[in-house]
Length: 293
Image 1: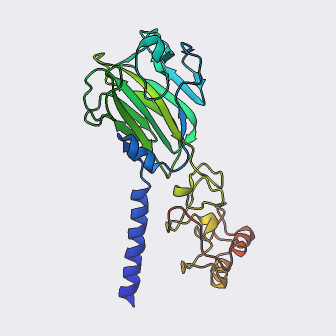
Image 2 (image 1 turned 120 degrees about the horizontal axis):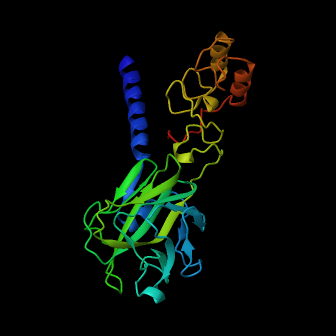
Image 3 (image 1 turned 45 degrees about the horizontal axis):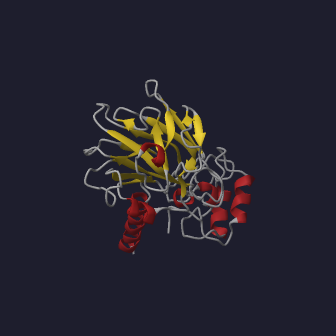
């Protein structure tokens, strides 16, 4: 019997580790793989809805993305294929600058937006780029350019197309940074910025896939027994997979104490409020939790 319990425990730990690994942020340099892994509907900013040749001053927004930068007297600009001769990945306009419609190594741009679980963008350059020449950082993860990962054939003007993307199904982020080493040896442009707003049914700021209590708002994700279910939806105090009268008896035994597991609402003490939470979950399993099967 003890061996069976041990094996079950090891199995649960394994599943939790798998969930954590699966939900870790992922970086991409291939647009096809990125698109296939997107956790929701993509929103694309292709710069074609903006006025051609319009400047984007630092702090200004285009289609929900705010651009912050300091480019030594240079301003970002909505550049067009017809006005520059540069090719683009879609339609006719792209992100350039008022310095000959290009960006250069050393430029850094911070993008701000509503919380998302994914961001990706295309990079265009006629120059021979090297690994890590351009990077995209967001949500604590960095996607760095891989010189061999050219996306498709060169464009009409001879530019090679690269892609950088980040997906984090367990957490949202609201900023991303395009950065370069800073030696000024290559030129590039940006086009088609793709974002995906994360599904968050309970509106607590934690996406469903990484929310340990996905239908009840618990921004703190408090889980005192570390079983993958947040306390606020885990009245299964004896951990048998079901909320029953046995759990009520456990809670009653620690009433008016600071028992952390029975303190379902996290106010520091077990009270009738916690009993009401338990009663509402009676005859149900704990959760649901995006971290557990």
